[in-house]
Image 1 (cartoon, helix red, strand yellow):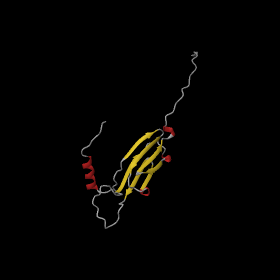
Image 2 (tube, one colour):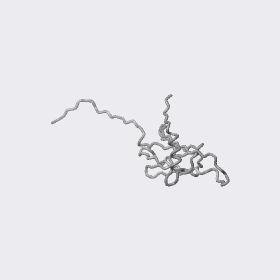
Image 3 (cartoon, rainbow, N blue to C red):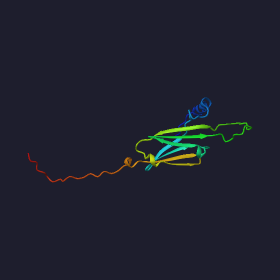
Image 4 (cartoon, rainbow, N blue to C red):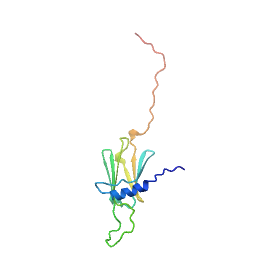
Amino acid sequence: MLMRTDPFRELDRLAQQFFTGPGTWSRPTPMPMDAYRAGDEFVVEFDLPGVSPDAIDLDVERNVLTVRAERRPSRTDNEVEMQLSERPLGVFSRQLFLGDSLDLDGIKADYDSGVLTLRIPVAEKAKPRKITIGQTDDAPREINA
């Protein structure tokens, strides 16, 4: 089994948390995602653990799909003294530029177990199709000049 390793990934993550802090509406943090095609639809999955469904916002303008989510602190008590905080809080955002081959009116979104799944159907005009070839008559023709 081949594994891609990056020994500095954890250091980069910690440096990003230290220097940028939590995401804000003007400077959101990107969220991890997977995208693939399954038959006649394009599927995109976003990891948003701990985000309530009402804190997720989906917008489509022209061919740009924008996903925004906000993870708020679960504890709002002022008397709580946090000992360790590794779960990122704040605003997360991702934009996808979708091609003309997708049916933007047919987008379906589901949120289950912290994963937002978008299913975007492929437009009829972009689906593969067979083109029939007509035959011409093979009989010899006489050309008059």
